[in-house]
Image 1: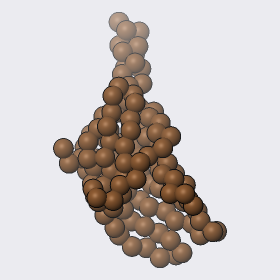
Image 2 (image 1 turned 120 degrees about the horizontal axis):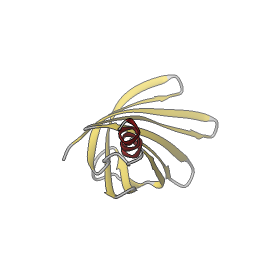
Image 3 (image 1 turned 90 degrees about the horizontal axis):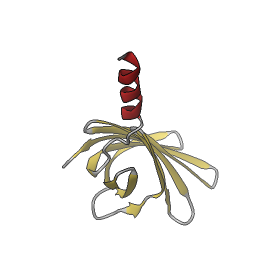
Length: 120
C-alpha cells in the first residue's frame, strides 16, 4: 500500500502546473543601483506540458516568449529584443506567480522581480 501511494505522489509531482491565463501584478526593476516599480502582464496558453506566451508592461505591449520550459511548477523562458536576451524564471503556486528576469546589455545588469496573480 505504501508503495502504491508513493508511486502516485511521485507521478503527480511530475505534472506541469497550470500556467494558462493572464497574470498581472508588479515587477520591481533594479538597474544601475536604482530600483523602481512597474506593472507586468504575462499571458500564457497551455496544452498539456506545452506552454507558449507573451509578456510586457500591459496587454498592448507584449513580446513573445522563446525557449519556454516547464518543470513541475517552475517555468523558464526568454525574450529576445534583438540586442538583449532576457532570461526569466517563474514559479506558480495556485493563482500566485513569483519570479525573476535577468538581462545584461553593454555591461549593465538589470533584474526584475515579479509578483503576479492570475486574472482569469
